[in-house]
Length: 70
Image 1 (cartoon, rainbow, N blue to C red):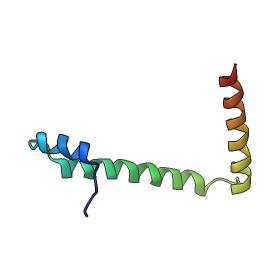
Image 2: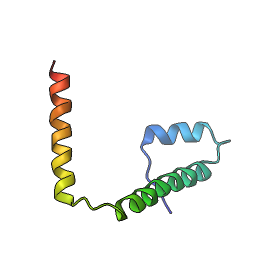
Image 3: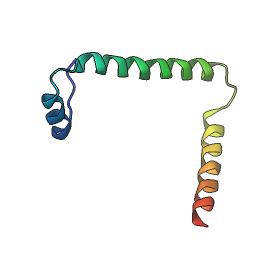
């Protein structure tokens, strides 16, 4: 796998060649994959429809907006 990284990050990585960047990337990918698997497992048991989830999200966003407007 090839990853594109911003130049600023690439400079830091070159400066610290002692780090095993591929292992760090592998661990980060595994962590994200595990989160997705957990989410899939939780959602597979949910009876919530997508439109319901979007409606809840809109209500949460409005509540947050009101709280920060004060």
